[in-house]
Image (cartoon, rainbow, N blue to C red):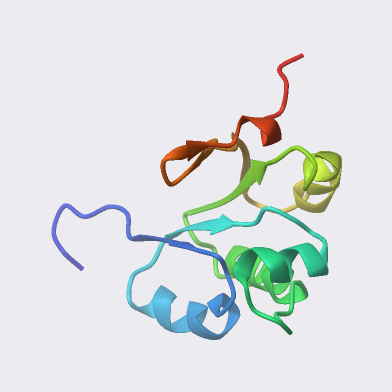
Length: 124
């Protein structure tokens, strides 16, 4: 451990987290930021661009991280119109009893040089 260093964190999509978490914890990891934009397996495979990725492994990783008593666990969910806005309440239900924070993040409407305003959610 380095003197004065209070937080060692990683941001991940969680695909290999269950396998790597015990070693990361041993190395001093005490905070995890997991990107999880959907709870639907087919949508998850589309986002991570890998077939056969087990979405339930993320749930296992979240639970394992809690059991290992990490200092801070956060889930970021980018909300996109026409893709996952119907899952917001599912995220709340999924995470309500877990020791973590969930952040719902507005989609940034940029694709290279072009704006993608059509998938922004309207403010109500």
